[in-house]
Length: 106
Image (cartoon, rainbow, N blue to C red; front, top):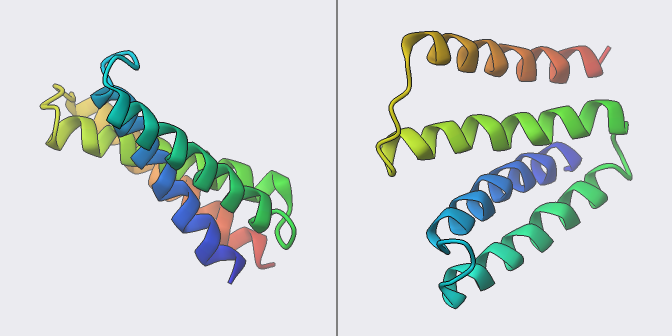
């Protein structure tokens, strides 16, 4: 269950980062509010997950999910130009996240 909470929390990190972008520097109160709500949910989930998972495992996975998710959202929804080299490193990050999770079980 801790892994699912961690996954959801990482996705919420992508959510709040996206809402922060949409808030236009917190000038749009609706998206600013969604940013704060997303932050609370994301951090709260990380707190719950670290009751059952080591911080050295949970935190890198949480930030990795948020980082990969933010790159994908930036590319798909905000039409950020992502180079082939950047995509290569995103794939490496995904592999690293999976590797950390697999190695945590041993």
